[in-house]
Length: 220
Image (cartoon, rainbow, N blue to C red; front, side, top):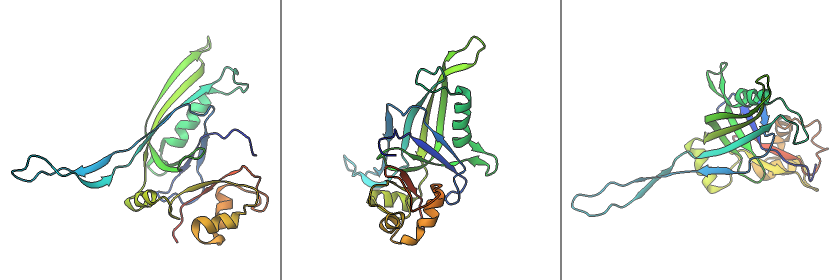
């Protein structure tokens, strides 16, 4: 609904092209207060014989990192009681190693107007801050770094800022239709049943304004 607090969301997939159904989701209990995007340009700095400087020839943009922290409060001070360890395990289950595919899950991180990122978990640490006398944790902070999981073609498309082969995110507004948004993003309105299924919509005709929709990558 419009005006509802939007939470950062992590979705897990088992396929490297992010096809198929969402395996699991993790929603931030409290949205991050800080988010860091890091990226690195790679240059060829070969220097010619007898020269005093080098011409930095651009080679590529290396996969970037996204770093953020998740605060979990089980004291009820935020008006909602949660099981801290259960939330930590939900994060680990969504982002961590998956024995069925013999590797960590493929992830999508989405929040607000940020570019939806296809990534994998690079590292994570969990700091428990407060405990009950029994030793049960009452507060925790998960610090995580994700790294881009895009092939060269996708990174080029991101640089160009638009491609049906990328994951897109849209806030549904009055006057929007799902087929119309599919036409804008994919160039074909007929993808709306797949998009409705990915977003777990009971009816593509009854979408409330303010709803965030994920449009997965497709091959056109």
